[in-house]
Every structure is written in structure tokens, then in C-alpha cells.
Length: 230
Image 1 (cartoon, rainbow, N blue to C red):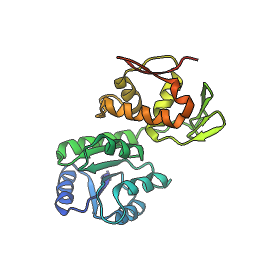
Image 2: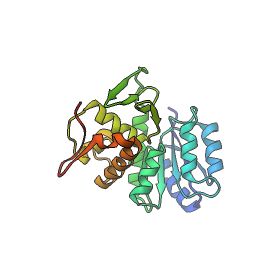
Image 3: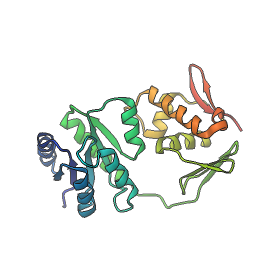
Image 4: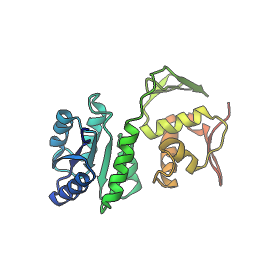
């Protein structure tokens, strides 16, 4: 049976070696590089099963590498785990919004990193459902889920991946109130390590992009948020 190939991108040789040692011990094949340019070339040439990507890289920085990987049809389905020394919520949310599948902060436990990697690999093996045109509409807001498009009246707006997922969740359930934890579970899965404050940040950004329709996302004090009932 072929071993799963993991591309490790980090400019620190000791970190590279630590990850390589632990991944090989778990039966993975490993290829390491130290720059963003090398990461993009290796991803295209090797098409690894997953990528562990440091955000602080010489040349093309990690966030840009992730964006380019997710924009390229040939590499967009490869799971990307961010490896970052930045533990601020805004940095983590920004990384997830550009398409990263998970993150691990430095200093890290190799066991935790491998557990996150295995989870990302399991998720990537779930068979895709047939593409169906699905559209949602409420209060003058229209979502085309297959085209990943959102319109407010006749104006198209651009949402991040997380903002899109939150709006989709609300559009499916107008009038229902959801706690911040429930929103996290619906958008990112149960027990995902994002704080409730991160939800407030996403709601604020979503309201701003919706313009005058932003007031349709109502705050229910002491409970959470809801989309105004139809």
C-alpha cells in the first residue's frame, strides 16, 4: 500500500526535521521545502495528500501560498494545515478564511499535529456529492450555493468562506436563534477550537458587507444571533 505523502513547508531546519521524524514514525512519506516558491512547485509536481504550511516564510509568505493553492483547480482539494507562531484570533480566522483546513500554533505537540493531520486527511476522503444547483432567498438576499455567489437585491457581494457558511446557515433557518457555539458547530464542526469572540467578528463583517440588509441579522441578548423571520 502506498504511503500518504505529506509536504512540509517551513524555513527552520530543526522544525522540518522534528515534523519529518514524527511523520515518518507514523508511516507517512515526507517531502520538505523551505520557501513559498518551492512549496507551490512541489505541490504541483508531487500533488501530496496534505500540506503542513508555516505562515512565516521567506519570499512568498504562507498566506499567499495557501491562497494560490486553493485558487488552483489542481491543488485546491489538498488539505492545508497552517503552522503558525501567531495565536491571535484575527490571524487564525484570516488563515481559515483563505481556505486552510486547520491550524496548529507554535510551539506545538507532534502528537496534536499528527491528530489534526489525520482528521484533515479523513475529511478529504469523504466522497463529494453530485453538484446540484441550489439557491436560497430571503429578504432580498439571494445565495447560489453551487456558484458560490451572493446578491443583495441586484448587487453581488463578496464574502469570505466563513461569512458565506454563516449566512447559508441562517438562510436555511430564518427566525431561529442560535448560540455562538451552535454557529461554530454548524460552520466548522463540533469541538472546533475557535472562540465565541471569533463569531462576533465574523457577524460584524457579514453585517457590514450586507449593507442596509445587515440589520436583518439580529442579536438576541444573552442567547446569540438569528436571521429575521420571513
